[in-house]
Length: 111
Image (cartoon, rainbow, N blue to C red):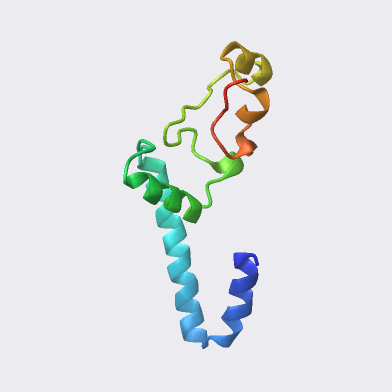
């Protein structure tokens, strides 16, 4: 079940005062998480803060094209917009399909 469907299912059963408070609190938490993601340098993968970083990025809804360029133990592939991602990935020995931002995970080396 999607969280929005769950939210729409539960919200009508709450009194208006509490429903408004709940929406305000959730909106604040999402905005605060997005702000924290803007200024927080990603921790190393083995760090105790890596799990908190991933939870905050999920709360901030930073995934796909909205994900941060830097992730724990991964670096962004910064290339000019007119350059071919496939050619640059092959030069670095990476699988071109895994370098797409929507792949959802760090680039993988070619086998």
